Length: 339
Length: 120
Image (cartoon, rainbow over all chains, first blue to last red; front, top):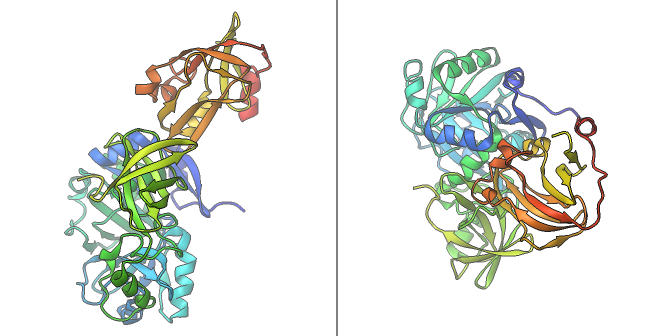
């Protein structure tokens, strides 16, 4: 089957992007190289075409029903906020981690690309009405410390984790890189002019390769790796997202895990080397063992970092990894990778 | 550079007076993306043709470079230990990985033109 491409495919081709298959999609992996793009986003401004992700428009009449399906408080937060939350199934597992943008008149729900159909089916099963705006819009994430200054003349800049809109754009001061920036949604016919505007302002195109190294360095989970239908938010060390005080699907399981503390647990690690403990690598810490969910090189720390899921809370901070037959030591870190 | 030959596993080698110099092709470094670490062999280690000699860590994936023929390592490019990106920048020049004395000559690699056809 031919892979799907975004509306901006011809732009990516014109920039001689390298492509990678990502689920059903063929997406830009890099333009000038992953490490260079990583550096651009950490020090100036880069933009990502993330139009493969979903965009569902939802009316406020549906909010009570949505509140029964996610682990975070959504009703009481102001109507100009963005919210990171997780759809939970009846067994407490994560169906998807998503962003909600609240506007005065509606909400936009942004599921992961690979989970869009699943979330649409889930919403339909619980009689939540929505309009799928994904096919007729694009989504561009503009990220990096210079981004806000570049966009200030043309966009009213909301507070961090807040939303705003103009006639042509819906946007929020959110992202997936650990840097400041805006994520901007607009109709397909405005996509190319938005990209050209960003390039004129000096922002550079970046691909999914650097998006992955950036999110990992920013200690952010990726669905399918740190979260899945076999992993609860409590197990993924995302208990801070559990702010929904009412009953919701799977809440009994999460509450039980929170009180018993008897569950597998995701930890972050560093290795004092550039040797990477990749997904699937086994690590032993004291009397418990774990499996690496994501691992890569951190350009800022100049060493290898990652997430590892342990069977139980480890008694030691020292991890011994078996990296393709070699025993390599790593260390559990409880703070974020970047301060 | 016309004496350089290529393998289907994307290494290049230059055979000269029973010594081979080995690296990975421009196609291979481009496929791997940014290389951040290499595990080089020890001088004196002996490898059979097809055995994994160098482990190449890139942000995208990890890959091995294999011995083009039976050989014993005589020199490694230690610059790669601190500047592995040299392989990305100059794969068939400064990005060479190791030199080795050939124990059994097998000069069956592809010419540049044949390799270009193979990867296209």
